[in-house]
Image (cartoon, rainbow, N blue to C red):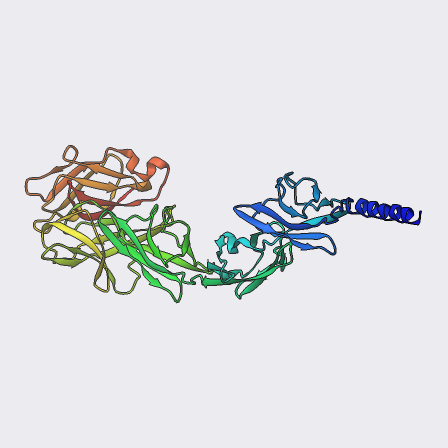
Length: 486
């Protein structure tokens, strides 16, 4: 019986042991073994902290605001949720739950940070001119070639840099770029890089001179005399200078106002302001002297005739100035009787001179009048003066001293010709040709009936006798004689 009981006991123990060996042991492993985010041909591997169940992934040049399917390796026999094949938006923290075979869970927090810390563009704009920096990523330098930075070196730059990075100092803070400036870029993951901004500046020039000043009339060019000490330009010409565009050259990179293409009245002083690159200025005062001869009245003379010359700038008060009559072989000074100087609307000064010829004048048809200062010719008439010096008409006397309306005027002399001018009261000049004037064959008597009462003062109710100049003129101006009209 004891043996039977012992066998039953042994059999039970064997059955119990066999039952224990057949029980399955389940895995408790629930780790993320590796975690990668792919993008742009790269895989960015996360740093896994198994103790704190965190995964830090540093990425570059990936837009994590778009869904990305990570590459995940987990413990054998474990499962993960959400699935690794499910794309996620990693610009926010993502949690993954890993479930072991035995049901144990582990929750991982995935934190994706950018390692980007680059300056992508840099510029400064002194005086509204933008200069762009050249970025060297190897040396972490930004080189800028500038012009005129010395005029305004303290500037707020324009900077673009990595989206999730921070920058110091603040880009909205003005910096002095005449010296090197450093900017520190800190990536989202904390990585830092320092860029050095280096400027190579070409200073603006301060040259602000008028280098040449000219008038051009056809093929003739007149050069101005420039005084850089007193900032003046003096120019002489024998042309009309009311509405003139000068030819001006100035310092390189400078500007000038008013524009030389704007015509000016140079009978008055004109101021030109030259502005250098650095905005400093010089103002030159331009004074022009125009020597002009308009005409001579008349153009033909007997050598004892009186002429009138009109022009501009013919100032005989200037020391050593003179008016001369010249042709290729002869030169004679004009003898000035009277002068008139008037200022015209444009500001030009018109001069009128009454003149006679010297006694030794020689007959010629091709004289020109010249205005000279210290022997230098300033202007030559464009018109010719015709002078006859032989057998000239001369008035010696008259048949009366005073004449009234209706009288007959008889002049006595030699070489008299049928032509007479009468300079009557109120400035009126009356011309009488051979239709009115008779001259005897010997040329010794000239007769004119005075039958125009408007030549006489009494016609206007004036009782005083008027000294009346009579001048021989038959197309050539000759000598004069004075009588009285009442």
